[in-house]
Length: 227
Image (tube, rainbow, N blue to C red):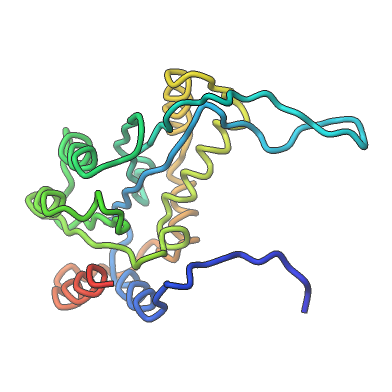
């Protein structure tokens, strides 16, 4: 046994529910899954490492007064890569997220009938209006098990790549420059990237899609909203 750095996980995770989710997800056509989430950015983002003479500390200048975070709300699919996205100042609330779903995720090209929108259980995601908007387009809405976004949501790896590039190369020190940098990096995410992130999260391309398995959908929805 080797001494290794620990990777902390939430004690509150329910492995039974996570197992049920993986079983259910294995029965979807992965191409129909649409993952949506948020990530925060700020004008103090910078590379964590730099060169310096041996024995000397490396320094980097970043703004101390960085203002509010900029939040990116985005979606990802297996074949299309990054989908509709928007940046806002500050954190996401219910009204902001409902507006994103109505005016970005659903328009101008709506979700297709049979697609499955997957969210985590952030309070802003749990409103009846969000469900009504999604289901009105013939799509379905499911929630990931609690404390599971990091390993069950492929968009988290997309956000990691975007943040890494913004921090390493952009040096954005105003909100306008930060938003421009995010927009540029979003276009650099390829369908190949998305396929790798989906596979790493356990969603293999070509899984059989059982859209008619309404009992399984109902059960997963019930368990995901009750935990």
